[in-house]
Length: 262
Image 1: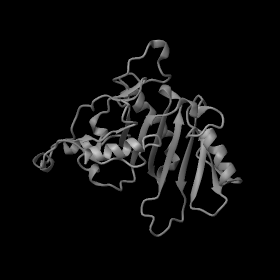
Image 2 (image 1 turned 180 degrees about the vertical axis):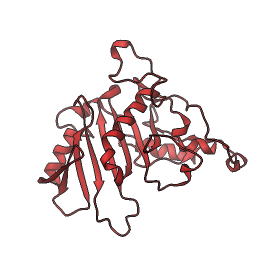
Image 3 (image 1 turned 90 degrees about the vertical axis):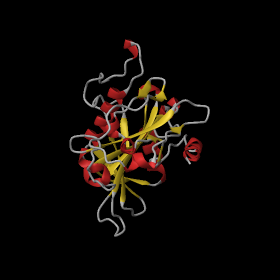
């Protein structure tokens, strides 16, 4: 079963697995039934995203850790040693899993990093295909968004679709230096009766670490904190990066091990 999951994800690697993969590992039924006294500590094995980004993630940010299992990682291709990474955390203090909060699959305070994987550096070229926010917005305004129908909120410009919809497409600057942007989608009230967990999701390409794609999601109530959430995700990534880079190639804003999130 684990091999089948990896095979499916390998075929879908270019676009990323849009949902978190099931957990696979060697945990026995006896181990799974054990009731731990605390959340497992330590870190995951190093996971290569790009040559400049190799992540070792604290286990409290890995839901699989409680089951004595290793998460099934999606390889970008059968020839590649690069993996797709996921992790979670909880608001308001950006903490990890506990023996209590992991039981609630619909926790409105949870933020899920759905995927982080290598992208094509040329996605940032003008008018290139892919998930580079300026290019994505340009295509969306041409194809289905109404350029004149928007509202500004929480540092974002949020556009309505030409066809009535319960979703907004929001665009804005995501980093303090103004070097990169973000595109995110959010549901808006009133929600449909069957909408039990309205979500917002960010999905974009960043030029950092040689070029990566990232997607994260959470409950819509957390929209006012989108910038704080996105900033913290990158602080985690910087702190957990174990790739050795020359000083002159150090990614700007890198948090050294032992800093916040380390």
